[in-house]
Length: 328
Image (cartoon, rainbow, N blue to C red; front, side, top):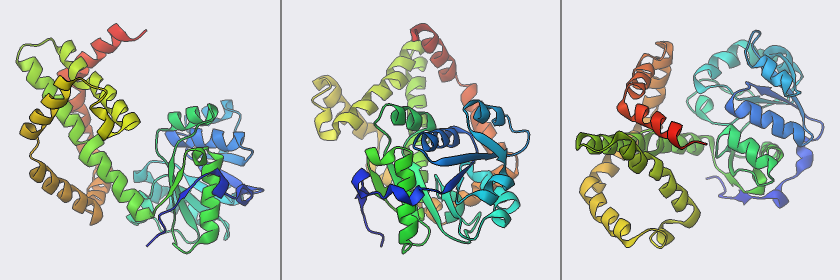
């Protein structure tokens, strides 16, 4: 069992990164934010991209040195693979593995590719997973607050790797808020579960069905969007800031009692937990990972069907109208 530790600035040896060259492979959501935060923390950073990548000029405009992936990897002491999960195994095999220095360490922002064996590190490896988007990571770094992060090492007894991971997390601003020790397995499976069972799965469908019920009953779609989607963010922000026990003190008695009563009518708690356990099992046994890779190899046919369905749903049109009316 991994030690359940939480680290702050005082627990980190920043010298672990001194003199080390970091390669950031990919310059998207996380790649850009992490590269800029590292640079501003005094770390030597180079960005590795495929020739012809549209992100090449973006990185150069940000003042970063950019080169082909193979060239950047050859010189790096730490290689952060910050590309989509589905392409990571192929990229590693084609451009990274043969060019790694024997002493180089691999880094990831998510353990998917390693946990499901899309690639297998030949040396040290770690995860530093900021708990937020790249935009939030950069914004909080600049305002001096930072995002919390998870940290894990490929081999549980790799103390040098853990120290390096902590130094990396500090350099991107995460030790200001707290770094939680975990494992590749735990980080990957819990992250996938939260996305599928709540954030990107059940929550979206719940909001959409609530919207449909109001519209089918004759209510203005814009009003339905406000009530079912916009206010969901207000509630979530309040829960995160205050916690569940204090939540009732911040909302009306009408909302609190009505919510408890209606929630029990809508959600069969035992049935939901049974179905959630099935989702978790599919994540744990690799069923979802296999389906994900298969859909990628099929040009994301299933994913694109879901995207099209959302784009054509009236909730998306109502949301666009609401944003146009309310944004300054």
